[in-house]
Length: 111
Image (tube, rainbow, N blue to C red; front, side, top):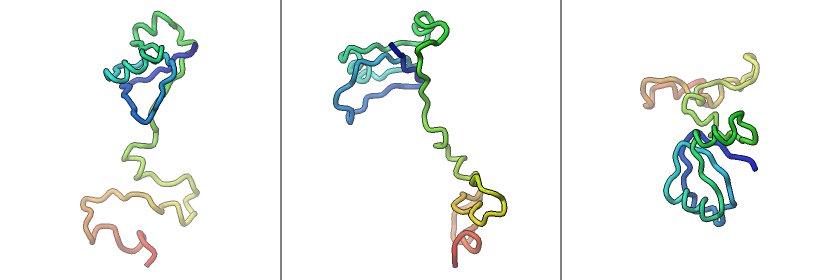
């Protein structure tokens, strides 16, 4: 009854032993993923097919990847106050080189 909607590619996962009957809408499906979904009694939809089935998007579950998986997020500080000593702990610095002399000394480690 519900449709999983994913803006991306659905790929096969060999760790998933049995696939339930899923109704999935995505931009692309790999051949193995499509075969497994259809074999299990599921349905693979494109976005134009979804627009005809559910024009208002009812019974659609939108899926997205991890929001904080971007490399840029590693440079952001933590959600603590500015006075907290741990505000800048484990925050990746923007540096031109990763050598011994570049932002590795005082303020980055305990010693």
